[in-house]
Length: 151
Image 1 (tube, rainbow, N blue to C red):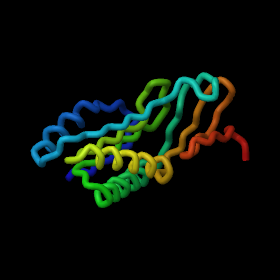
Image 2: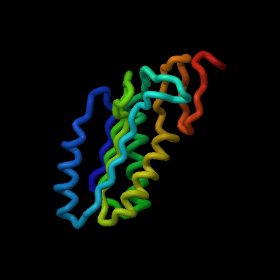
Image 3: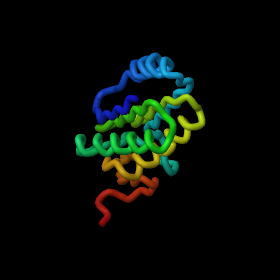
């Protein structure tokens, strides 16, 4: 079983993760790999987004993601979990998060990936500042936007 987490400012070569997981998990009877990739939206509320700035206390955020991955492994019949979250200033179309899950069963892999995504969005302390045509907004895990500077 592999549970791997990464917080990074660098672009990710996701193909390397995919080929390794496919090769290793297939030898243990897995036939499903579900991947979720989130990316920066170019338009929100009819306003053009120029960038999304992610910041995190990296070691704490990574350990929280590991805890979530371990929880998913206990909750679902899965073999591997990889959670990668980008930080820094990202532009429209740039990937922000990758979640990869392998399993014997595609249903378990899909359910586990969704479980992981929702927990990451609500529990991992990564701040998100959206810079767009009508101002800057802090984006919360539930999708609410709060104008920057508002108390």
